[in-house]
Amino acid sequence: GSHTVTTAADGVFAARPGPDTVGDGPFELRVDAPGFAAATSGPHALGTGDVRVVLRREPELVVRVRDAATGRPVTRFGVALTRGRLGGVHAGPLEHRQPGAARPDGIARIPTVAQGDWLVHVDPGEGKHAASPLVPVTITAETTTHEVLVELSQRTDRRLRVRGSARP
Image 1 (tube, helix red, strand yellow):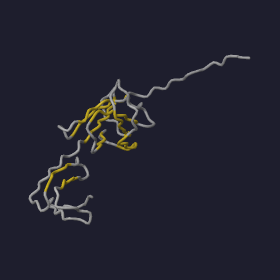
Image 2 (cartoon, helix red, strand yellow):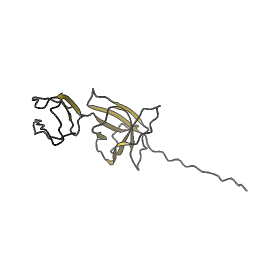
Image 3 (cartoon, helix red, strand yellow):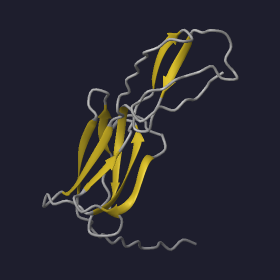
Image 4 (cartoon, one colour):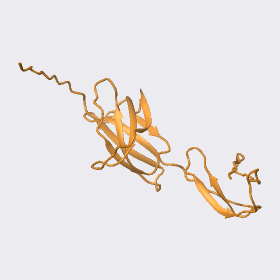
């Protein structure tokens, strides 16, 4: 069975046998907190003291969006990620969606992005910029903040005239 405990403000905790505890162990601890990668520690015998578990902050992705022609920040856009790489198959769903919003500095911050290969898609919505192509980024554990620059081109309007054919 499992048992959940909460730490004090300084991180100190005490795990006591719960109703599902069987025997004297050994026991393994699984520790998690929002914004951090889960960690395990153990095995520990019942009554072990001074257990120290260090959590690593989950990587954050910073998406900078600029106008490709001027280099100025694009101040309104939405962003989404999908797992995969360019040239590879990526059939996964969009994750980490952030809807279109005002971003005066042209930056979106996406917290707790899992390690691996991702494709970034930026959609400025209606306006003078076109949506971005997929931009690859690799998230690693060695760096807590990853950054990707996405340059948006001006939207171009094209008209297509289709002539019908007379078929009997």
